[in-house]
Length: 387
Image 1: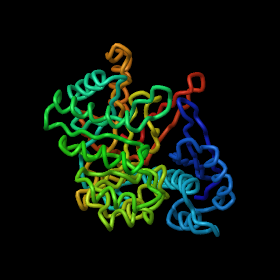
Image 2: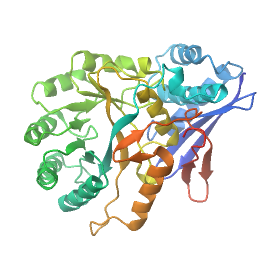
Image 3: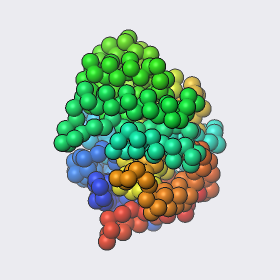
């Protein structure tokens, strides 16, 4: 079996999603995905550079191909290149699983867990709408609820106003939902150190599950300063592109949750490359409820459970990101169509119930049978070979 072609498909919805299909002369193809948001054309260009190196290669030599792409150039592979390598790597493991007729986790040492705790994303234009949205998520069985740092009246984030609103939000959520519900906020690296310290210190009394990406990741010293000034659990790493970037923040315990995704780091199911030995590790698993509200698509969604299912060390895989619960309408109520879409996607794509994913693979690879509906721009994945 040899690699015969590599194709890139850009699917436009609320953002552009980058899918990679690796074809072989035996007729088996694998599907991968690159998760570098907003730079999909750059990833497409990187894959075009890689294509001559890959044609004629044995797709089973995943380690050799990874080394060739990651280390074969003079300049280190980062961000754009690692996203392209990740997409190719996912597709190669997909081919390997299909050719051997086994789930990919069996090729990585076997399944070590049956269920994984998940969390969903919530939102609202006001504090009251956010509370209503979280209450609906709680009624649906979610055990961990996340929302994002907001308040952009003119499309510009005002840090002071955003922090004050976030404090009001977590106070209202604790009052409405009780102390047992796990709450998390995603800052999206949009605060400077002073405001991040302010937010984290005010959050301490409400015991959040974690504060996600409170600072930019370029300078580990910033996380060292923040860690010394707060006790709240910190989550970071979504923007890292390899295990080496995680090393300092993990070894010095500057973060509590190491967050990585198969479609951005330069590795897919191979955990020893993409996941550092953090005390607690989160791998992003965005589950699709509405296509327009999920950060990544079916290929990455399908890859992450294989990676998580075979690891049970150091309390890894404590939680994984799951679907945004709803887009709250102006009157604070979720549209019936949103409920139907969420139930349909949860049932057909990941078989999730009560915030637990049951990992039941039969004769699967990583992803299968991707169908693009060009008339609507929406992507559906038939998981015939994964469930």
